[in-house]
Image (cartoon, rainbow, N blue to C red; front, side, top):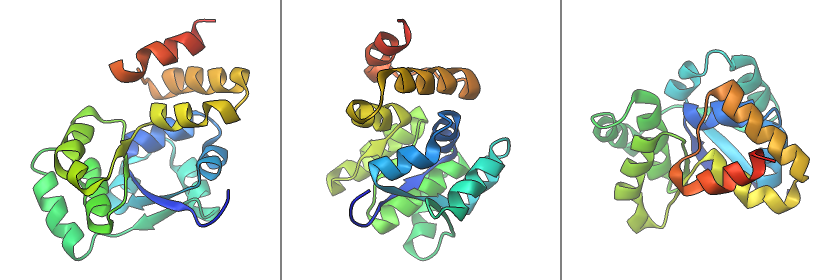
Amino acid sequence: MKGPAKELAADASFLINLIATQTASELAELAGYSLLVPAAVYAEVKRDRAQLESLVSRGIARRVELEGVAVLHYVVASAVVDDGEAAAIAVGLALGIDVATDDGCASDYWLENARHLGLRALGICDLLQSLEHQLEPKKLREMLVHVRRDANFEPPDTHAKWWHSLTST
């Protein structure tokens, strides 16, 4: 990783999928991300808690509390999306950073409320596709298989063709 890590507000769906790759630390470092994990999201990651705590202890993820304007963003977002997604969205909007989510409703909400700020929603497919040329094809395929199997994840229509081209060999 070169230079300071770019902060990314993460929700539970993204973290669970990232952890399912079995290379979460390496992927976050390779992409140059530091993950901000709101307390509500941290509470949602139960089965993979040890792996999340490992990301925190390695400095790749950091638990954050909602404060200031983030609380107001949370109140508004929580009327539309679940608590963890609302917390990640609130952190992203308050800090002016991208959000990492694999939740369709959260992505839609984010696009409606953050696109004008030049902020984007990033999912596990976006992350892996952006790193595709830096990863060995066999390793990337293994990651996708793990995410599908261990996180019960199906790629969104926008990435389905790419995903299937790598996993159906």
